[in-house]
Amino acid sequence: HRYLHSFPTRRSSDLLNNGVCMLSGKRIGLQTGNIIDYDSYYDLEVAFRKQIDFFTGKMISACEVVEELHQKCLPSSFLSAVIRNCVDNGIDVTMGGAKYNYSGIQAIQVANLADSLAVLKLLVYEQRNLDKKELLDALRSNFKDNEKLRQICLNNVPKYGNDIEWVDELGSKWIRYFSEGLRGYKNFRNGKYQMGLYTVTAHVPMGQNTGATPDGRFAMKPLADGGLSPVYGRDLEGPTAVLRSVSRIPSLLAGNGTLLNMKFLPSNFADEELLDKFISFLRGFCSFPVHHIQFNVINPDDLRKAKADPESYRGLTIRVAGYTAYFTELAEELQDEIIERTTYGESY
Image (cartoon, rainbow, N blue to C red):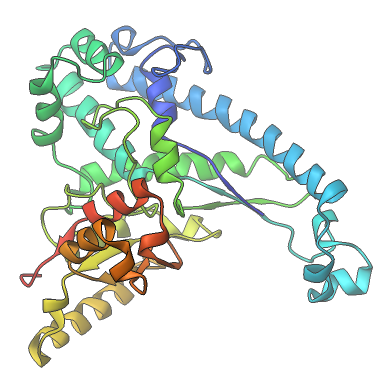
Protein backbone atom coordinates (compact mmCIF):
# COMPACT_ATOMS: atom_id res chain seq x y z
CA HIS A 1 0.00 0.00 0.00
CA ARG A 2 1.82 3.05 -1.28
CA TYR A 3 0.51 6.56 -1.53
CA LEU A 4 2.06 9.53 -3.28
CA HIS A 5 1.79 12.80 -1.42
CA SER A 6 2.96 16.07 -2.97
CA PHE A 7 4.88 17.15 0.11
CA PRO A 8 6.66 19.43 0.42
CA THR A 9 6.71 21.69 -2.65
CA ARG A 10 2.96 22.26 -2.96
CA ARG A 11 2.75 22.91 0.75
CA SER A 12 5.50 25.51 0.54
CA SER A 13 3.44 27.24 -2.16
CA ASP A 14 0.48 27.40 0.25
CA LEU A 15 2.84 28.62 2.96
CA LEU A 16 3.82 31.71 0.99
CA ASN A 17 0.25 32.61 0.00
CA ASN A 18 -1.76 32.29 3.23
CA GLY A 19 -3.03 28.82 2.38
CA VAL A 20 -4.40 29.82 -1.02
CA CYS A 21 -3.51 27.75 -4.08
CA MET A 22 -1.71 29.98 -6.59
CA LEU A 23 -3.26 28.14 -9.53
CA SER A 24 -6.93 27.83 -8.55
CA GLY A 25 -7.18 30.77 -6.15
CA LYS A 26 -8.96 28.50 -3.66
CA ARG A 27 -8.04 28.31 -0.01
CA ILE A 28 -6.85 24.78 0.68
CA GLY A 29 -4.43 25.32 3.55
CA LEU A 30 -4.28 27.09 6.88
CA GLN A 31 -4.34 30.87 7.12
CA THR A 32 -0.83 31.22 8.47
CA GLY A 33 -0.12 34.44 6.58
CA ASN A 34 1.97 34.97 3.47
CA ILE A 35 5.65 35.66 3.04
CA ILE A 36 5.16 39.38 3.70
CA ASP A 37 3.89 38.54 7.20
CA TYR A 38 6.97 36.51 8.19
CA ASP A 39 9.50 38.87 9.76
CA SER A 40 12.20 36.21 9.99
CA TYR A 41 13.12 32.87 8.50
CA TYR A 42 12.21 31.35 11.87
CA ASP A 43 8.66 32.73 11.52
CA LEU A 44 8.44 31.13 8.09
CA GLU A 45 9.53 27.77 9.51
CA VAL A 46 6.91 27.96 12.28
CA ALA A 47 4.18 28.51 9.68
CA PHE A 48 5.58 25.71 7.51
CA ARG A 49 5.31 23.24 10.39
CA LYS A 50 1.66 24.14 10.82
CA GLN A 51 0.93 23.66 7.11
CA ILE A 52 2.70 20.29 7.02
CA ASP A 53 0.85 19.07 10.11
CA PHE A 54 -2.48 20.22 8.69
CA PHE A 55 -2.03 18.54 5.32
CA THR A 56 -0.60 15.39 6.86
CA GLY A 57 -3.81 14.99 8.84
CA LYS A 58 -5.88 15.55 5.70
CA MET A 59 -3.80 13.02 3.82
CA ILE A 60 -4.12 10.35 6.51
CA SER A 61 -7.90 10.73 6.47
CA ALA A 62 -7.90 10.18 2.70
CA CYS A 63 -5.64 7.13 3.05
CA GLU A 64 -8.03 5.60 5.57
CA VAL A 65 -10.87 5.89 3.07
CA VAL A 66 -8.74 4.19 0.40
CA GLU A 67 -7.75 1.34 2.69
CA GLU A 68 -11.33 0.79 3.84
CA LEU A 69 -12.46 0.58 0.22
CA HIS A 70 -9.67 -1.89 -0.50
CA GLN A 71 -11.12 -4.15 2.15
CA LYS A 72 -14.69 -3.82 0.92
CA CYS A 73 -14.19 -3.69 -2.85
CA LEU A 74 -10.67 -4.87 -3.73
CA PRO A 75 -9.53 -7.69 -1.45
CA SER A 76 -6.32 -9.35 -2.65
CA SER A 77 -6.99 -13.06 -2.47
CA PHE A 78 -4.06 -14.20 -4.63
CA LEU A 79 -1.57 -11.96 -2.81
CA SER A 80 -2.91 -13.15 0.52
CA ALA A 81 -2.47 -16.77 -0.56
CA VAL A 82 1.31 -16.33 -0.85
CA ILE A 83 1.76 -14.43 2.43
CA ARG A 84 2.23 -16.89 5.25
CA ASN A 85 0.47 -15.11 8.07
CA CYS A 86 -2.57 -14.34 5.93
CA VAL A 87 -3.03 -18.04 5.17
CA ASP A 88 -2.43 -19.08 8.78
CA ASN A 89 -4.88 -16.50 10.09
CA GLY A 90 -7.40 -16.79 7.29
CA ILE A 91 -7.39 -13.00 6.94
CA ASP A 92 -6.95 -11.07 3.71
CA VAL A 93 -3.85 -8.85 3.42
CA THR A 94 -6.04 -5.75 2.98
CA MET A 95 -7.66 -6.52 6.34
CA GLY A 96 -4.47 -6.86 8.34
CA GLY A 97 -3.69 -10.54 7.87
CA ALA A 98 0.04 -9.99 7.28
CA LYS A 99 2.56 -9.83 10.11
CA TYR A 100 3.74 -6.42 8.91
CA ASN A 101 0.93 -4.04 7.99
CA TYR A 102 2.83 -0.98 6.86
CA SER A 103 1.51 1.64 4.48
CA GLY A 104 3.90 3.80 2.51
CA ILE A 105 3.65 7.54 1.98
CA GLN A 106 6.17 9.37 -0.17
CA ALA A 107 7.87 12.62 0.74
CA ILE A 108 8.87 13.92 -2.66
CA GLN A 109 10.46 16.96 -4.29
CA VAL A 110 13.17 17.43 -1.67
CA ALA A 111 15.24 19.14 -4.38
CA ASN A 112 12.61 21.77 -5.15
CA LEU A 113 12.07 22.32 -1.45
CA ALA A 114 15.76 22.75 -0.61
CA ASP A 115 16.30 25.06 -3.59
CA SER A 116 13.24 27.17 -2.73
CA LEU A 117 14.10 27.47 0.94
CA ALA A 118 17.68 28.39 0.03
CA VAL A 119 16.37 31.35 -1.98
CA LEU A 120 14.14 32.46 0.88
CA LYS A 121 16.78 32.00 3.57
CA LEU A 122 19.66 33.64 1.73
CA LEU A 123 18.17 36.34 -0.47
CA VAL A 124 15.07 37.31 1.51
CA TYR A 125 16.08 36.96 5.15
CA GLU A 126 19.89 37.00 5.35
CA GLN A 127 21.07 39.29 2.57
CA ARG A 128 17.69 41.08 2.37
CA ASN A 129 18.22 42.01 -1.27
CA LEU A 130 15.05 40.33 -2.54
CA ASP A 131 11.85 42.17 -1.71
CA LYS A 132 9.19 39.89 -0.23
CA LYS A 133 6.27 41.57 -1.97
CA GLU A 134 8.03 41.52 -5.32
CA LEU A 135 8.74 37.80 -4.92
CA LEU A 136 5.16 37.03 -3.90
CA ASP A 137 3.76 38.99 -6.86
CA ALA A 138 6.16 37.17 -9.18
CA LEU A 139 5.06 33.77 -7.89
CA ARG A 140 1.38 34.65 -8.15
CA SER A 141 1.85 35.84 -11.76
CA ASN A 142 4.17 32.96 -12.73
CA PHE A 143 7.08 35.40 -13.12
CA LYS A 144 5.22 37.35 -15.79
CA ASP A 145 7.28 40.38 -16.87
CA ASN A 146 9.88 39.53 -14.23
CA GLU A 147 12.36 37.17 -15.85
CA LYS A 148 15.18 39.06 -14.14
CA LEU A 149 13.92 38.03 -10.70
CA ARG A 150 13.48 34.42 -11.85
CA GLN A 151 17.07 34.34 -13.09
CA ILE A 152 18.24 35.71 -9.74
CA CYS A 153 16.40 32.87 -7.98
CA LEU A 154 17.91 30.35 -10.38
CA ASN A 155 21.48 31.55 -10.48
CA ASN A 156 22.32 33.62 -7.39
CA VAL A 157 21.77 30.89 -4.82
CA PRO A 158 23.47 27.45 -4.54
CA LYS A 159 21.29 24.47 -5.41
CA TYR A 160 20.80 20.97 -4.04
CA GLY A 161 22.98 18.36 -5.73
CA ASN A 162 26.22 20.34 -5.71
CA ASP A 163 27.62 19.21 -2.34
CA ILE A 164 26.61 22.45 -0.60
CA GLU A 165 25.94 21.24 2.92
CA TRP A 166 23.72 24.06 4.17
CA VAL A 167 21.43 23.76 1.12
CA ASP A 168 21.19 19.98 1.43
CA GLU A 169 20.38 20.28 5.12
CA LEU A 170 17.40 22.53 4.33
CA GLY A 171 15.83 19.56 2.59
CA SER A 172 17.00 17.01 5.15
CA LYS A 173 15.45 18.93 8.04
CA TRP A 174 11.94 18.80 6.62
CA ILE A 175 12.20 15.21 5.48
CA ARG A 176 12.98 14.33 9.08
CA TYR A 177 10.08 16.43 10.33
CA PHE A 178 7.61 14.78 7.96
CA SER A 179 8.85 11.30 8.87
CA GLU A 180 8.53 12.01 12.58
CA GLY A 181 5.01 13.33 12.07
CA LEU A 182 3.90 10.07 10.46
CA ARG A 183 4.82 8.16 13.60
CA GLY A 184 1.80 9.60 15.35
CA TYR A 185 -0.63 7.85 13.00
CA LYS A 186 -1.83 4.29 12.40
CA ASN A 187 -3.28 3.08 9.13
CA PHE A 188 -6.73 1.54 8.75
CA ARG A 189 -5.27 -1.91 9.47
CA ASN A 190 -3.71 -0.59 12.70
CA GLY A 191 -0.28 -0.74 11.13
CA LYS A 192 2.44 1.88 10.84
CA TYR A 193 3.13 4.37 8.09
CA GLN A 194 6.55 4.31 6.47
CA MET A 195 7.94 7.22 4.51
CA GLY A 196 9.34 6.76 1.02
CA LEU A 197 11.43 9.07 -1.15
CA TYR A 198 10.40 8.40 -4.73
CA THR A 199 7.92 9.77 -7.24
CA VAL A 200 7.59 7.05 -9.91
CA THR A 201 6.24 9.38 -12.65
CA ALA A 202 4.04 11.58 -10.43
CA HIS A 203 6.49 14.49 -10.47
CA VAL A 204 5.08 15.43 -13.88
CA PRO A 205 1.31 15.58 -13.05
CA MET A 206 2.03 16.94 -9.57
CA GLY A 207 4.07 19.68 -11.20
CA GLN A 208 1.09 20.46 -13.42
CA ASN A 209 -0.88 21.15 -10.24
CA THR A 210 1.77 23.26 -8.50
CA GLY A 211 2.23 27.00 -8.88
CA ALA A 212 5.51 28.81 -9.45
CA THR A 213 8.11 28.21 -6.74
CA PRO A 214 10.89 30.41 -5.30
CA ASP A 215 13.58 28.24 -6.88
CA GLY A 216 12.72 29.81 -10.23
CA ARG A 217 10.50 26.98 -11.49
CA PHE A 218 7.55 28.05 -13.63
CA ALA A 219 4.03 27.02 -12.62
CA MET A 220 2.79 23.65 -13.90
CA LYS A 221 6.29 22.51 -14.92
CA PRO A 222 7.61 19.13 -13.71
CA LEU A 223 9.02 18.84 -10.24
CA ALA A 224 12.33 17.12 -9.55
CA ASP A 225 12.31 13.50 -10.68
CA GLY A 226 13.13 10.38 -8.73
CA GLY A 227 12.52 11.60 -5.21
CA LEU A 228 16.15 12.25 -4.31
CA SER A 229 17.41 13.54 -7.66
CA PRO A 230 18.44 17.18 -8.07
CA VAL A 231 16.37 19.36 -10.36
CA TYR A 232 17.68 18.66 -13.85
CA GLY A 233 20.29 21.12 -15.03
CA ARG A 234 21.05 22.44 -11.56
CA ASP A 235 23.61 19.81 -10.51
CA LEU A 236 26.69 21.45 -11.98
CA GLU A 237 29.51 19.79 -10.01
CA GLY A 238 29.24 16.26 -11.39
CA PRO A 239 27.87 12.93 -10.17
CA THR A 240 30.11 12.60 -7.10
CA ALA A 241 28.78 15.91 -5.78
CA VAL A 242 25.25 14.59 -6.34
CA LEU A 243 26.03 11.52 -4.23
CA ARG A 244 27.37 13.65 -1.39
CA SER A 245 24.26 15.82 -1.42
CA VAL A 246 21.90 12.85 -1.55
CA SER A 247 23.79 11.19 1.31
CA ARG A 248 22.70 14.05 3.59
CA ILE A 249 19.03 13.20 3.11
CA PRO A 250 18.02 10.64 5.79
CA SER A 251 17.32 7.62 3.59
CA LEU A 252 17.31 5.41 6.70
CA LEU A 253 13.93 6.94 7.53
CA ALA A 254 12.54 5.97 4.12
CA GLY A 255 11.62 2.34 4.69
CA ASN A 256 9.17 2.47 1.80
CA GLY A 257 11.99 3.02 -0.68
CA THR A 258 14.09 5.76 -2.29
CA LEU A 259 15.08 6.63 -5.83
CA LEU A 260 17.98 8.52 -7.40
CA ASN A 261 18.11 8.82 -11.20
CA MET A 262 21.36 9.47 -13.07
CA LYS A 263 22.05 9.62 -16.80
CA PHE A 264 25.42 9.07 -18.53
CA LEU A 265 26.60 9.37 -22.10
CA PRO A 266 27.61 6.07 -23.77
CA SER A 267 31.06 7.57 -24.37
CA ASN A 268 31.72 7.23 -20.63
CA PHE A 269 32.12 3.48 -21.16
CA ALA A 270 34.26 3.52 -24.27
CA ASP A 271 37.47 2.05 -22.80
CA GLU A 272 38.94 0.33 -19.75
CA GLU A 273 40.06 3.55 -18.08
CA LEU A 274 36.58 5.03 -18.25
CA LEU A 275 35.05 1.77 -17.01
CA ASP A 276 37.44 1.81 -14.03
CA LYS A 277 36.32 5.35 -13.24
CA PHE A 278 32.69 4.25 -13.26
CA ILE A 279 33.52 1.26 -11.04
CA SER A 280 35.16 3.65 -8.57
CA PHE A 281 32.04 5.78 -8.69
CA LEU A 282 29.90 2.74 -7.84
CA ARG A 283 32.18 1.86 -4.94
CA GLY A 284 31.84 5.40 -3.71
CA PHE A 285 28.06 5.06 -3.90
CA CYS A 286 28.24 1.91 -1.75
CA SER A 287 30.17 3.82 0.92
CA PHE A 288 27.39 6.40 1.34
CA PRO A 289 24.04 5.94 3.13
CA VAL A 290 22.24 6.04 -0.24
CA HIS A 291 20.00 3.03 -0.74
CA HIS A 292 19.15 3.07 -4.43
CA ILE A 293 20.45 4.48 -7.68
CA GLN A 294 19.54 3.71 -11.27
CA PHE A 295 21.23 4.69 -14.51
CA ASN A 296 20.36 5.51 -18.06
CA VAL A 297 23.21 5.27 -20.55
CA ILE A 298 21.90 7.15 -23.55
CA ASN A 299 22.59 10.11 -25.77
CA PRO A 300 19.86 12.76 -25.37
CA ASP A 301 19.93 13.31 -29.13
CA ASP A 302 18.78 9.72 -29.62
CA LEU A 303 15.84 10.38 -27.32
CA ARG A 304 14.91 13.47 -29.31
CA LYS A 305 15.05 11.43 -32.53
CA ALA A 306 12.87 8.74 -30.93
CA LYS A 307 10.30 11.29 -29.92
CA ALA A 308 10.20 12.74 -33.43
CA ASP A 309 10.23 9.35 -35.22
CA PRO A 310 8.73 6.73 -32.87
CA GLU A 311 8.31 4.11 -35.58
CA SER A 312 12.09 3.84 -36.01
CA TYR A 313 12.73 3.55 -32.26
CA ARG A 314 10.06 1.11 -31.08
CA GLY A 315 12.61 -1.01 -29.23
CA LEU A 316 14.27 1.83 -27.31
CA THR A 317 13.85 1.24 -23.58
CA ILE A 318 14.56 3.72 -20.81
CA ARG A 319 14.72 3.61 -17.04
CA VAL A 320 11.95 5.91 -15.83
CA ALA A 321 11.63 5.69 -12.07
CA GLY A 322 12.25 2.23 -10.65
CA TYR A 323 11.08 0.51 -13.81
CA THR A 324 11.95 0.22 -17.49
CA ALA A 325 9.57 1.28 -20.27
CA TYR A 326 9.54 1.74 -24.03
CA PHE A 327 10.44 5.38 -24.52
CA THR A 328 8.06 5.93 -27.44
CA GLU A 329 5.10 4.74 -25.36
CA LEU A 330 5.61 7.31 -22.60
CA ALA A 331 3.51 10.46 -22.34
CA GLU A 332 5.04 13.42 -24.16
CA GLU A 333 5.50 15.41 -20.95
CA LEU A 334 7.42 12.53 -19.38
CA GLN A 335 9.53 12.09 -22.51
CA ASP A 336 10.50 15.77 -22.34
CA GLU A 337 11.36 15.50 -18.66
CA ILE A 338 13.64 12.50 -19.23
CA ILE A 339 15.40 14.27 -22.10
CA GLU A 340 16.03 17.30 -19.89
CA ARG A 341 17.59 15.32 -17.05
CA THR A 342 21.24 16.13 -16.54
CA THR A 343 23.52 13.99 -18.71
CA TYR A 344 27.02 13.47 -17.34
CA GLY A 345 29.91 13.66 -19.79
CA GLU A 346 33.38 12.21 -19.85
CA SER A 347 34.78 14.52 -17.16
CA TYR A 348 33.14 12.84 -14.16
